Image (tube, rainbow, N blue to C red; front, side, top):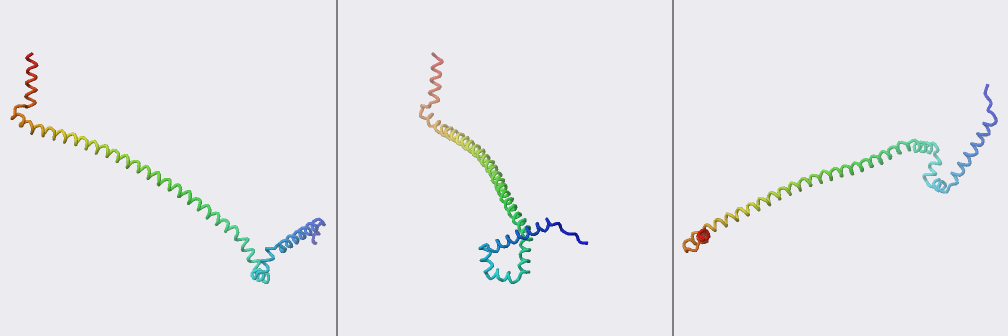
Length: 161
């Protein structure tokens, strides 16, 4: 007891078959398909339909994993690029802060060294002046025109008036 198909279903199948035949005819009349079918590879695949079907199924099935792999490659490359940029930014920031600290330390050391040199120069200069003034003092006393003696005589003269 087989069920009979309604007449509308058979008309739909005939319409589908007609559209499929038109699609196949348009693909076979495409200039690129015609040139491929005239090549040695196209002729080999035309003589071996099972191999052609296997190759077509393999390409169709492997499109999704290959697409996921390419997506993974692109995302990994982008992540590596962003990571390198972030890492480079981190390295430059840490290096810049380190350089700033070193330069501040060198500035402080320069100030301390300059102050030390200036104080040393002043102390040595004063000591040398004092030392040479003491060496010249006995020579002036022997000649009798010592500036200290003249100052003391001038001060005594001021008190007497």
